[in-house]
Image (cartoon, rainbow, N blue to C red; front, side, top):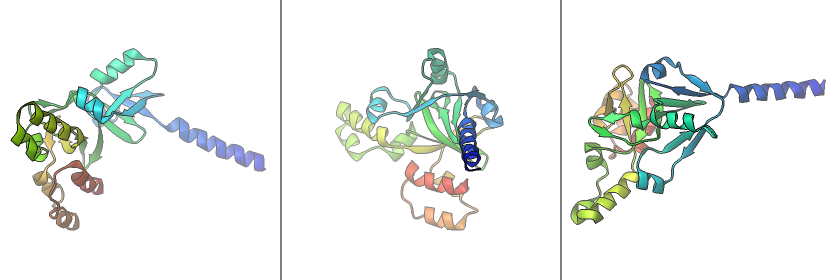
Length: 208
């Protein structure tokens, strides 16, 4: 009896392992409909700060070992990836106004029917949320290097509208709208002084 019980437990563990899925989405429509192609294996790697500083792009590199063709597809053409419960969007496909985010993948989540992803500040968002005081004083190459270093470490949230594909910055005004029906969260947010991801992200998570 004990032997059969152990075999049953082993079978359950194997079933959980097999059920782990990696799904790739070719476009926004497939992502919205959760209708992608399933892969048996996938590698999700966190990129280093030096890699981001030297080559730009988002925080995660996603690849498949020994399959260069699929790796090229994941890098350039794939829209989003789900690895188990974690969602990542391809920043190469994202635009904020006329600004690009670079390559590779940013972590994302669904909140109230929209997609929120965490990426570097770009355009006016970079100027308003991360510009160090020393960068404007020094100017030139030194000032640019300081600003670039700040951007490597800075993250903010963006909202991706699944109907239009439009991307908007999740700043204070956007958060006030999202929290308008959550008085306790709204009161707490009003005490915050930053629009960075570490602040807005904790409120977005509570709205899921």
